[in-house]
Length: 435
Image (cartoon, rainbow, N blue to C red; front, side, top):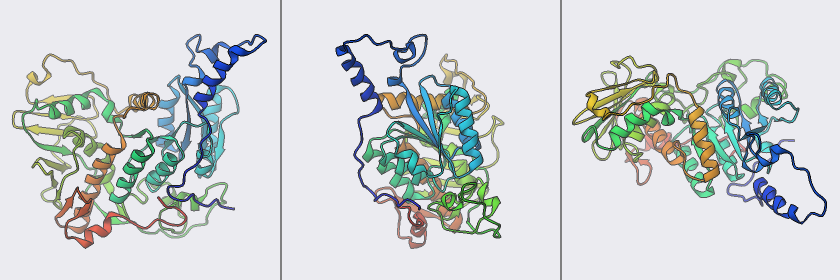
């Protein structure tokens, strides 16, 4: 029988945390009459991490990208991966084998329903790498269950979900890291620093690269024979998304249900990378207030202070994927995934050497998340930053879809005097999923 979804806002009485239990047990052990032999691993000897300092991790929706992320987590000595949930039997088996082989045991538990994983009191944090139709819903359920969250991007399907995710993280006090790993790469960080600190002069424009400028409504494909539930749980795969018949292309389609009933395409997919960096460059301020439809290969969005956010597909310096460019009155900087920077003047370096890291590894971002889980400080890709960047992408996508300018009010989080645009702010969620 399928489990019923918990009531929105319902609280769950929490047992003492694993770390508190271990610390309490250690203090009580001083009263023991007989001597106790404690293994060195429990005390953190020989380079090991004691259990009280380990972050116990579960994984939800671990496919290709999730497996890569998990590999970055498993590199960290203070991580203990203990459970995986996936709607696909072969993925559950593959991740269990990966974990069991690493730890030399048979302890990694498997689940088809992520709520069973979240019920476990011994799990501190979760890696969410499902399809985008699940990102916000699974993150909200995890936060309400008391788990810290590392969630792949795009983190939301629409503006309303972006706000719900942000507000839930604020209310529950959980640590949330969007998988925008470029925030923890040195050359991107330096480029954003130049923009934020005024080294480029008064900032005028920030440029993001979309991998295409299309926005359509998501549709159906011809019905195919649905696998057995234990092999592929199609109903759970759809989750809060609108029901449609099984089709293997939808099952493995990376862009399935991405963007509020709209297929967000490159504006949302790459925007969740590139616009996030642009938002960092403008000090993570509220998103732009005016959005123009495409013209001459560009989508121009304008912040309240007049700075322009420009989606541009062409005319980039060849610096690799995910390029960004920041222009001020006195200079400019451009960066991409090659790890290299191009500057309008070498004086902008001010004698500094910026480390070049080719590609876009997530290891540094994962480490930032784990450190913040322990210190309870805000990670680089926190929920507030993710919310602003995603709203900018969703609003640009609305202008693209409608083919006309839209104006967004950051005080009310609505489009000004535009019922048609406001209907695209959200979408109905399929029963029983409510956030």
